[in-house]
Image 1 (cartoon, rainbow, N blue to C red):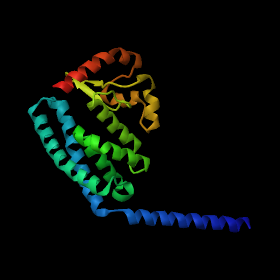
Image 2 (image 1 turned 60 degrees about the vertical axis):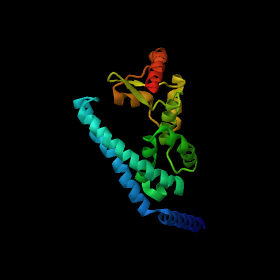
Image 3 (image 1 turned 180 degrees about the vertical axis):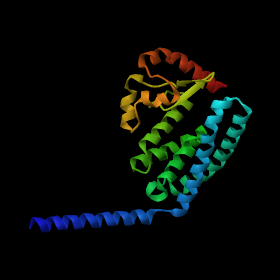
Image 4 (image 1 turned 180 degrees about the horizontal axis):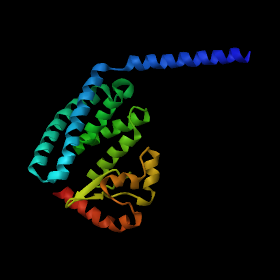
Amino acid sequence: MKNLFLVLVLAICCDACAQDKHKAAASFDPVLAAQLDSIFTDDQQGRMLVEPVERQKGFDSKEVKEMWAEINRKDSINVIKVCNILDTRGWPGPDVVSLTGAQALFLVIQHANIRIQEKYLPMMRDAVKDHRAQPSALALLEDRVALREGRKQIYGSQVGMDNGKYYLSPLEDPDHVDERRASVGLQPLANYLAHWNLVWDVEVYKKQLPQIEKLEKEQRIK
């Protein structure tokens, strides 16, 4: 009797899995996924190529400025495409456009101007609630919008630069930042900042914070 029950349970589970796969296959949009795959490549390719040139030639070099002009040109085209998708389709999840396609949506909005970011931030919040977007990606957009609006970031994802040196942009409640980062699936801040050769010392940062806030305010005015 127990064996029969186990067979029935397995059969039900297998049938449910088959139905889930069928639903996923039915919802997948290969045309839209291919479009977003291309957008993802456009968004990332130039940024990957410019990094070594920045290190070698300097941020103000002619070569770097020309590369960023091309990156910005592609961004301006991609944001029109992505806004059209979001306005007509909502925020498609990975089941519709693949993981790469879903990432492309976020990246283009993350690299857009503040007006675009503010418009689609609520849509991305809803997408995260419905598991169509990643909480870690939303955290980065939340931080970028906060800073652009003159507020402090929440998750410590945004790094600024002054005279060729990196620094952590103004951060709310530095003492508990790792708790907030963990809640959205982000690594500890010390590990994250190591990518910019920055050492995270919360007490030192709190002392530096007024000067950092002043610096960022001056940069927004320019």
